[in-house]
Length: 402
Image (cartoon, one colour):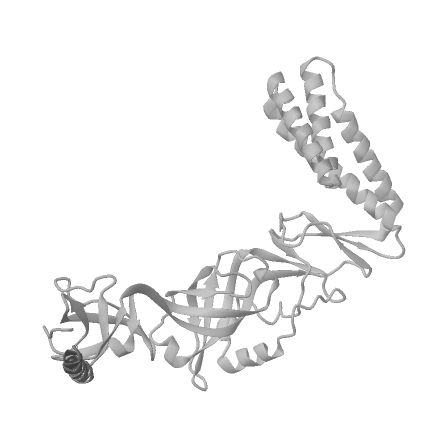
């Protein structure tokens, strides 16, 4: 028995040595699993926002008070702000604004109630809905919503009384509110000066002083050096109420001015479409159309893009951080190390039936490490989840892989 064991030990050692030697001299293969992916030809930079802006200068010196919300759309001729000169009771101003709000709400309710003419059941249903809404608002502590809902209920009840033949009080209530408004305005008197929107657009009280420097009329004349000077000034969003209280921004059309390396501009032309991402404000992509490209200066070119997609708070900004995405490439994502050349054809070797197979590819985009590719031959295509050979001792079509 002992003799048999002594014989088996050398045999086992020999087998281990044979396996180790085969492992050392055998073919070593490293693969990666092919997956779909995308890459962007992108430049991170800063840009300047240019808009159609109409700055309003206060008619008198005094305290500025907006009458509309920041960013609200206003119509031409609409009252947008008031200037109070001298000493004006803040309580009077507050009461006046409350009365004006109630008047607007009641007038709006009366307009909406025209659709309920003669329909008692719809009126009762609407009253029940608004009553439930008022209770819900009260429970959540939103007393402003409760107050607004009360006016809606009052108007609905008045309309119900009219339909039932009991008359109504909404007209007299509206007249009363208008009388209160006139009385409060008389008390404020000449101390109140109204500002009216000269054109329609978005209202903002943010005025930074660049409105007359950067305009759609002169933006195409900007050169890289001037743009760099402006970006270096980046004074933030200053509100200069002493010089100009507010402005109207025409619709949501705006322009982005930015400098790009001349080689990244490449063959881009006026009229081409590209994409931007204002990553500080939103992760969404914004499409921009090239409006102008300047001459090269110190290896840079100034590009102006026209955009029309609304991004919250963008119109209040003058300087923005952004990513200029010239193009987005989608296909199969793999390591540049996996690319090979066979008979002057670029491709990759994949493992198929435990053998090497060469697949021609078209490189859509690549960096130093990663490439996005697609099949170059429909008769011999790549397949999702193919095992692409990154490294092997040798590359040969049909080579058996162990």
